[in-house]
Amino acid sequence: MDILPHEKQVYEYIKTIDLLKKQNRDNPLFSSEIKKLEQKLQQLKSQVYSNLTPWERVQICRHPARPHSIDVIREICDSFTELKGDRLFADDEAIIGGLATIGGVNCVIIGQEKGCDTESRVKRNFGMLNPEGFRKALRLMKMAEKFNLPIVSLLDTPGAYPGLEAEERGQGWAIARNLLEMARIKTPIVVIVIGEGCSGGALGMGVGDVIGMLQHAYYSVISPEGCASILWKDAQKNREAASTLKLNAEDLIKFGLIDQIIEEPLGGAHHNPKETCRRVKEFFLDQWAGLKRMPLDILLEQRYTKFRSMGQLKDDEATS
Image (cartoon, rainbow, N blue to C red; front, side):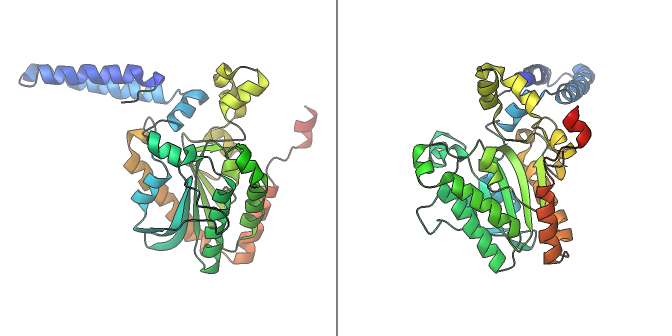
């Protein structure tokens, strides 16, 4: 079991309670004491998980047992037919997408996939998209537009692949084209940040009418380690960088960069992946109920305005 540093105290408590239960299974005298310990455990959990630092939340976001795009798709879709390839170069395994039905709603779902073990991580390139990945995503979005299907885009990437081959095949151009095309695709787009939403890799699939974000996911122009390496020339200052970047959901909703925080089970999505997926599904269906009634011209205008208004400074902020 992968135990995060801030969870060690909680798991020690759980281990002690389990040991007491085993040793005193047939002794009713200890049942009341065990109940008291279980109550204290709940209090400890509330205390630990309500005082998490930004870096601790980044660690939760990267937990190996956290549900990835493929897990979410399996859990929330009534049916799913995967489609592959960008029709120009190759199929990028860092992207999984296709036709789906979610709660009776026909849609196109696209997710960035990191993989869950060494073999699948290598296969999926650790969730880092090549240019063909962005083109594959755009091809599926264009298909959704053609058949009037809503789009669900799941973000979970440490960034676009920075290798020479990706640059040679037009990495920057592929991301820029997605930004342009997603801004004017004539069908509703629901974006959900389920894990790491890092740099242009996330933004290249992140333009939408509504942006939801899991409570302990993060969305940032750069990873904390990358930021620390640039600002302090020391990747070990990742804790300071995580705090400075304001990459948590509460900061982002305040700045107007996301629209809604999707609460995770106590301690993070890895503690109850099934419930987390249920909440993601509920978020999409709630948003679809409103988006499907909106005229397309208003939908597109609001999407454009939403992103054009991001990052503006007020006069008093600029001079302070």
